[in-house]
Picture 1 (cartoon, rainbow, N blue to C red):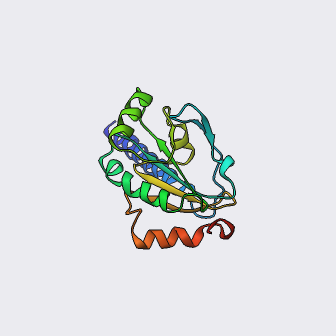
Picture 2: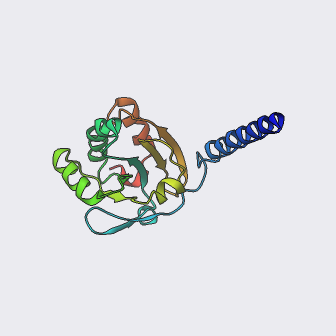
Picture 3: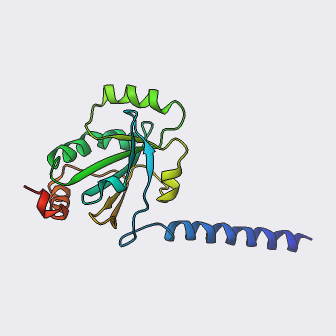
Length: 175
């Protein structure tokens, strides 16, 4: 009987590892087409990824309760302002769930920034893009293909990242 119990535990453990590995390696990555998403925005409108085709898009998954997310928000805003009108669109996707509108409205008063906030209150966009930790940012090219995933906080206004993003901007919009 004990032998059967141990065998069951071992099989269950292997299954958990296999599912976790699939989830990790099954993530959308470089070269994959970014699935369209349509989410309500904090300003009351609805935004979709497809409406920004022809632009370089940064999908930034974050939450107000995430300290690294709060820390990088101003640097991300500086990047967004640097490339405003030059072909970069920043769409922040909030993973705040309960009372998200109220929490985000207060947050933006304390931490003002210029880019739109989309509400993913049920986590559907995070599931679609297989986001497992915050912050996570996905860079999408002008044709809707994923270029890069950034796991964890970044120094968005660093010279290195600014040059990286600038090189990817659509040439006709760089002026």
